[in-house]
Length: 54
Image (cartoon, rainbow, N blue to C red):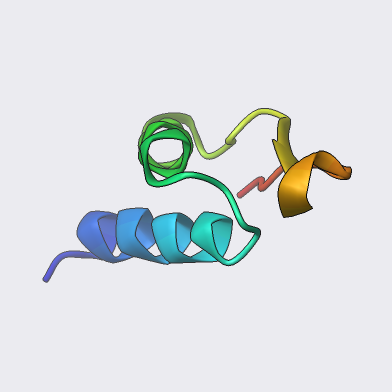
């Protein structure tokens, strides 16, 4: 497994742990994989805004 694939999987699992839908998590993990930044998104049931940066 390459580092890029690991980084996508890590981001996906991290975002899912924030109680984000699978489709939204897939989009945000892909964005993280391509740019190193997920952009801000609602998480924790809509009570927080989160962002993951490289």
